[in-house]
Each structure stands twice: as structure tokens, then as C-alpha cells.
Amino acid sequence: MIITTSTAGRCPTCGAATVSVDDAEPWCAGCEWNLDAYDRQRRAPEFGWAWVDRWSHRLGYRLTRRQFTHLAGRPLGTGGRSAAAMVTAGVSVLLIGAVLALAVTGVWLIVAFPFPNVAVLLGVALLGLAVALRPRFGRLDPELEVLSADRAPELFALVDEVAAAIGTPRPQVIGVNGDLNAYATAVGLRRRRVLCLGLPWWGALSPPERVALLGHELGHFGNGDPRRMVLTQPAFTMLGSAADLVRPVDTVAGGGIIEMIGEALGKAFQWMLSRLLFGVHLVLVAVALRDSQRAEYLADEMSARVAGIDAATSLLDTALGHESVALAVRREMRAGHGPGRWRSAVAESRAAAGGRLSLLRQLSVREESSLFSSHPPSGLRRRMLAERPRHDPLVVLTEERAARIDAELAKEYEQIRRAVAWSG
Image 1 (cartoon, one colour):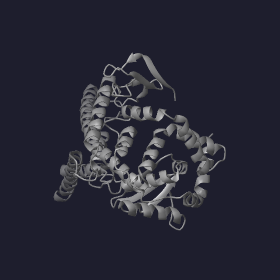
Image 2 (cartoon, rainbow, N blue to C red):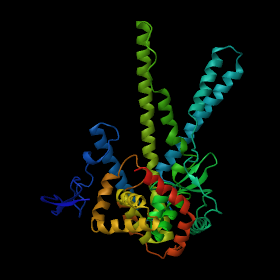
Image 3 (cartoon, rainbow, N blue to C red):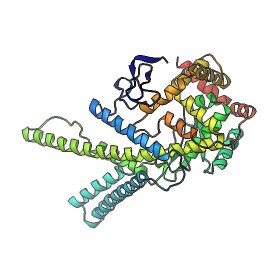
Image 4 (tube, rainbow, N blue to C red):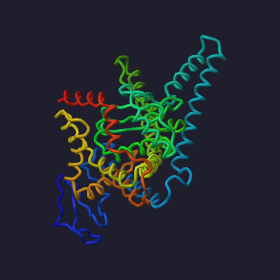
């Protein structure tokens, strides 16, 4: 990562020299002038039209900063439900009611009229539409390697300790995979709680950072995240499914001019209806994700509570250098080394970053702000934690205990290491 300090330009607000990281649009590190700039060269398009993407970025940036200002310095777990959460829940209830109405009407038309009858055909169509639009509650990832308490007793005990310390339910399923990531989710109508630890990520973290990671992920079981609640799932899926359902598709060509005109008119109507439904879907998701970002801040607070501020902020800084971490871990895997060496390589990468971290944190506020991001920017998350009161960690993971956990997962570590090595 190359950092350059501009000598030709000065901040028009405070007069300080502007800075840039890796050819990003320059900004002022002091007053953050131009940090909200839309950097088209470094940002993947969201809509495909430059002016819409620029407007979307600016709006997402403003909403993100406004939420941070609103939450900073106040208890994140109090204050009741946000307006975004209430809108999401309300719309979800309406959508569920609409699907139930379609199903009930379809069944009534089928049983109320003798067959054959046009009403029966309409009833079958309405019932099929209700089935197609039903809420989806997710399934267990087939690639998840599910662990048992007998197989990994130390890991399960640590998870239980962290859950008890932050006052959240324990996961009902604990598993691992080969991703440089971790997640907590709920699947099925009964919302079975699932914790997944990506072993390249877990193995690359120091013991305090592992506790912070568990605190954050388990915090999602008690922070009201709408992505994991059964009542709010329809807001994220149903209108998008409806848009896909009515999207026009090409059919077999043939027929006369009348049929061609009718088909063109039908496709035009389907296209407009599909775009309308998808537009409403995007608006609803953007609103719902405001509350998801609040939930991420709360999960970070739970992480800091159980592991300490230093461990929680260190975890965020490690995540900020995700690409460097991935390169370091992959290099050590291909060299045949285990998680102990992964951690050393990541620590060396962090040390090499040095003073660049403060600029990368600022740049993340620009590059990670979006209407459609479920997470606040890493820089704001770290800043939020840095302003919290300091306290001793509730759970301490020693090097010896971390080594015992790694020994329990030795088989899974080796499988993932070989998969990476074989991938070239």
C-alpha cells in the first residue's frame, strides 16, 4: 500500500496538506474535507449509471455519518426500537398478510366452484403465486463442517463462556469452513442459531482477538439484527422474489403481427412492473440495513465488553487489512505452516502497516459507506469503540488454551491448508 502526501493541493477548509492512499481521491486527514468524494475508479458500480451511483454514495455516506453521530456517546442497547426497525417490521407484516390473502383466496376459489371452471384455474394460479412469494428463512450451509461438543470440548466451552458473559443465547450449531470470515445466523422457521468460524480467519487471530470475534458474532443473537429475525425476513426477500417472478423472458418466436404486438406490450408491462417491485425492494432493503448497521455497533460493544477495548479494536484493524491478511495466510498455508505461523505473518503485516492504519481507517469511511451495506465502515466502528469506557475483559483466553483449541481442530486445519495448497 503506497501513501502519498499532496504538496500541490491544500485543504480549502483548514489549509493542511491533503493525503491519499493508493491513488485514492485526496482528502484532509485533519478535518476530513473531501472524504465523502465519490471515487469512481475505486468503487464498484451499484446501479451502472455514474450519476445515480454518485448520488447513492453521497446519500449512503450522509446517512452513515448521521447514524454514527446519533449513536456516539450513548448506550447502544437502550432507546427502544429505531424507526428503521419499526418500518421494516411493519412492511414485513403487510407482506406476510398479502401472501396469506393470496393463499386463502386461491384455496377458496378452488373449493368454492366446481371443476372445470375459470375460477378454479385462477385459484390455482393465486395459490402458486403465494407459494412462489412465501418468505425464505434460509438453510444450513451444506459446506459447513458441523462440530460436536465431544469433538471440540474446549471450543464449545469457550463459546459458552462468551455467550454467558454477554447474556446472549448459545448457538445450537457450531461449525467451521475454509473462508477468511466468520458469521452468526439463524436458519429455518424455528430460527436455529448457527455460528460458523472460518478457520483461516480464526487461526490468524491472537487469543484476545478470538474472544472479541466470538463476542461480536454471538452478540448478533441478542442485538435485534433484522437480518436474523423471523418477523423481518420478508422485507429482505419477498419483493425481490416478486420482481424476478414477473421479469419478462424471451419466448419462442412465431405468430402474426397481432401476436407480436401483444407480446411486446406484455413484455413492456412486465418490465415496468418488475422494475417497480425491484425499486421498492431496494428502498425497503436500504431502510432495513440502517437498523442492521446499528446492530453491528451493538455487537462491537458486546465484543469490547467481553474481550476488552484493545482486543475489539485490534480485531477491527486486522479486518481492515483483509487483503493483506489473506495474502499472508495463503502464503503460509502453501509453505505447509499451521495457525501459529499464520498469526505471526499477520502480526508482521500489521507492524509493516505502521502509521498507515489511521489513514486506512479514514478511507474506509468513504469506501465502505453505502445504502446497501449491512456493516458500518470499519473506521467508524473502531472510532465508536474508542470512545467507550474502558474496562477489564470478562473472558480471557490464554495462549495455552488457544493451543488446545487449535489441537482439537487440527484435522480441519490440515484439510483447509491442503485445499489452498492444491488450488495453486
